[in-house]
Length: 137
Image (cartoon, rainbow, N blue to C red; front, top):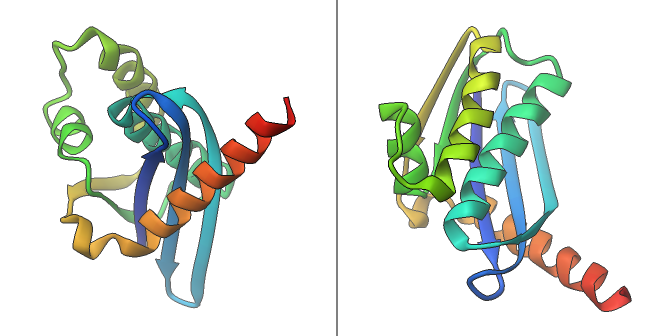
């Protein structure tokens, strides 16, 4: 079983954004900080979820039992209900829905921010990378 902790961060709302993934399994501990485009905080959480699913597929871990933890209630509830009436989130939900059938068993669960500090730290690193890229332009 893999435990995947996911978070996103933005500098401003909207603003430069980043995401973080902390993946823990038997004999496995991976950390990833990644850049996201300029987004609102909720959009960044959805984009980070999509990025996480793509990353897991790239690693060919889709046949494992995966617990994916997020501190975004909006993302967790939207995926759980498989519905959003917010037009800003609909595109993200559709992109996520396209990837979910590839996974044998993937459970998305909300956790409080206090239990997601590792992914939060990585997401902040992702924002720092985004800001450096922005400064180069």
